Image (cartoon, rainbow over all chains, first blue to last red; front, side):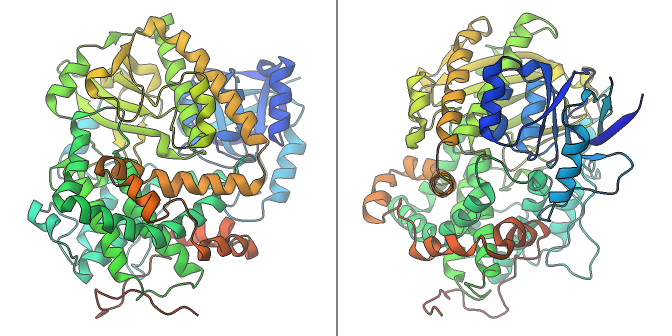
Length: 138
Length: 469
């Protein structure tokens, strides 16, 4: 199995959710996805590690999340554990040196991740204690 | 097999939960790690005894010495780093401008709290402030808890002073008297709550075992057995998560909605966490959606965890009332639970009632509806309103429970214009978005520990600030 991205694992679990990665840029896109009834078909890709942005998606049963910043101690990390929803945090592309920097200019890092992940079929692997991984499949 | 009890042996240094290390005001000295070892090192560097177990007489004394003030400043700076440095990587919310509202709140608190806390101390006396802390020993669903009590000193004094120093609005020698007022209030509440001489959980190997034995026994008798994989277990976990999410959302994505205590050792070898989830704070106008869905002020959950099945190596109930474990996933090892309801903040303990696990799904619907409505409401708010509301959550809520119990909240609103925003802070609104001040400068100062400059030697303990330029 080839992993395209990895990051902090918010909690260790044997669950391996899969779906089409969907980047959610704003609250409107979150509400639109929920209203479409297709929430559970997607792995959600978001920029921040906070809970408020994804609140209704978590509440309605999102199956897995990839964040581009944040850690298990962030609110989304805590809540993903409580919901037992696998979550890979501060993800970066395997083979790339680009990393999220707290307080830095992360625009290029985010753009690279979105381009590589959005719209792809993916499965999350979060059995490791520290590292969560993203695998693509066709 | 668990090893977590080793963490409570004097010679044990605990596990490391993160790779980062802390420097703070101790340049040229070895960096400090997180956890039990970090606490030991920080206390060994103190010049006074204020970080050791202190007596009631010490706490009743009105004035800290300069060494004590600086020791508290240094220790709180490390403690803030210890609990928040990893959380601080979470970046922008996409919904609520949290860094912006946090920084404004820190500064507003440092300016406005001292006179309100002094007025409260004058009204009820130092012992009365300690009794506010002690009230938490017999209650569940109370916001007199770790995170609120810690915030008085760590946020109002520590981060507030740090932010104003970074903005160059104040100098290290300013507001010594006001700093003493804030820190004394914090010390008295926390000492009254713990009653073991310490004030912070990090000083006690991350334990917050504050409830009296008879309270624990009474709650323990109501625990329902939960088998992993059963519908009851799933319902309990689902409810805990959904209520926690709403409590975060109602408090503008901040930790004030959550209050854990424990771990309490049960007779059968298992451990219990008592978790308060504040799902409806009626002081906020946006919380009307929770009211419409009949969501109570607080759901209190007892979570019983099997440490042996989990292979628990360390459990921390940190000073912002949050439980972290190694391994991380304790949810799978919940083997028992109970849920209680406190309808209003002042509902007497005798009227707190239990909801059986089988009935939780009926309650879950109200929580989910309130979450969706709150989200829709926030998504339509302009940025400035979100920042202002978030600032109120910090500035008001962090000392609201203490003022309520002291009976001084109304006086603070009427005579001290508690809900007004200081003109200086209102003006900072425009400054904090320049040159990355909110997004980069202040977080860097706060989370590296660099910004908590000590009070200078020989500064007068009465020093305030009367000159602005």
